[in-house]
Image 1 (spheres, rainbow, N blue to C red):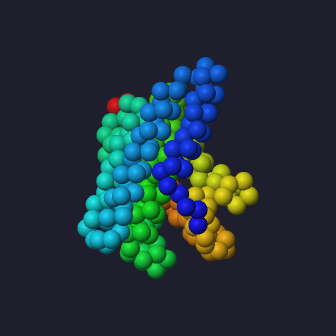
Image 2 (cartoon, rainbow, N blue to C red):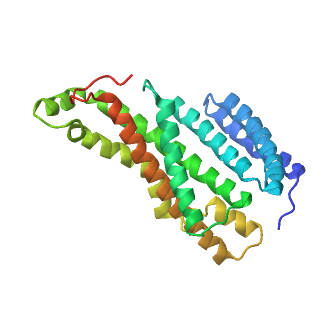
Image 3 (cartoon, rainbow, N blue to C red):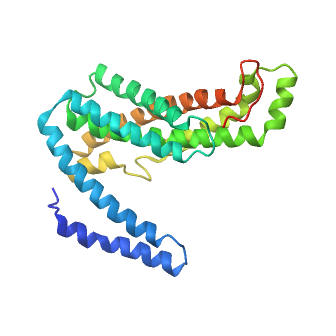
Length: 253
């Protein structure tokens, strides 16, 4: 296993300097974000590392659940911030991410694919929640934009006797695809173009490549489940904000 310490981390900051230098050369105004983001990532990850060491030693179920809840809340807040002018967006993201995450993680535990240990549950929950967060934000953004941008077509469909679900279905379908696209592309290229984090981490830690591959396959299937459930939940909760019980289109803000 590679012997890593803070010295190696500080030396690797040269890569951040290269990125900042390239952005300066091309006059891309992101240098401040790059610098602050790198420092923030360092501080957050070091803090999380020490916190996880404490949590892993305790093996407390209430503490594990609390960590998962905090992750979901932070993810929902971040996702809602990406969606413009949608009423109760925080609640929509929270419910969607929670359902997608809990169903997927619960099945992994019920099927005895993983055991209820902090070192398994928390990292996998983090993968699930972060991917669900992105899917939820992308799905909501797309469906909100499409419904508002195609209001005349939707109202025409409603006037012809279609239900709100029928009138909005083409836009729901495209929004779902937008939310799933990243995961679908990942499934197409994993192992050929990309060697993902879980697999790479195990190999770097000295595990047999085949074992690492088997874990990565489980992770890929896990993410597909979570992202799909989250996207569908986001669609259901978001689209309903734009229609009354009498199948009339409203703004949704």
